Length: 96
Figure (cartoon, rainbow, N blue to C red):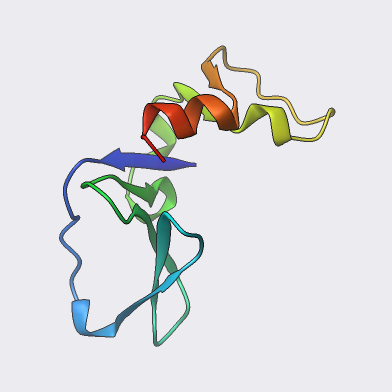
């Protein structure tokens, strides 16, 4: 579960953040000291996905979108009604 950011998030302790290219179009950021996953970022543009669990009060965050639904296991289902996008739709939406 992530929150969308359309600019780089402010991270305290940025000197401890390391990132690696997880695909041709994206990278993932982690704390180099403890390994906590901090973000997923598209290499083009300013899109970041930040784990909702990093924020206090995250249990009240709206759940509105599921992506890559064509790749999820058949028994994987959320109770909330959301917008759903296949991998092809995601790539088209972000011009990847």
